[in-house]
Length: 203
Image 1 (spheres, helix red, strand yellow):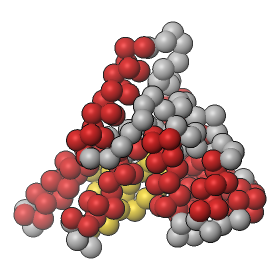
Image 2: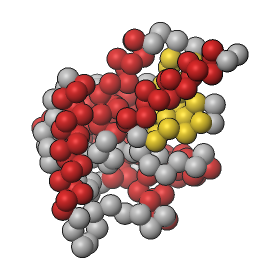
Image 3: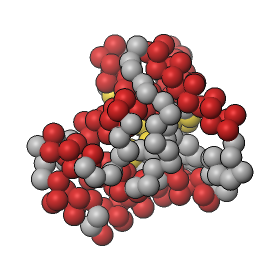
């Protein structure tokens, strides 16, 4: 089995495209498995002094991003409703829930449902009642789950995930890593797989 690291932050717009299709990519490539790794791309971008769509407004760039996501979603064959709420008010909470979920086997479904509601229904992640509805759909107790997501243990793990991402020279979401090769962006997923196939041919 070939393991590809999938580093992501809920809050990244283009990550919607990857989240929607990774399980299908796994089905079509039986030897590939994605390891989902949530982290804070916002913290890294702030440290890089690279915060998108801050004043003065970058309307042309913003408009392009939404249209690009709309086009790419159409290419892939899944729905999208843009513009979606952005940036997120509860960015960190959304990702800390993901950190908790990845430790408890419901993380991938949480991320998928969160992105689907965000980009298909315009419901912002980690905001009530949206977040509690998602957790309830997963068979979880919303109050207890949110308390755990806000615990010191999960906060420390979230910070550690972000430190690891920085050490791996990750600067954006989504990022795919195989054998220390970094591929940034949803449109680089296929390049990652091509690289793996090329590497196997050269063995």
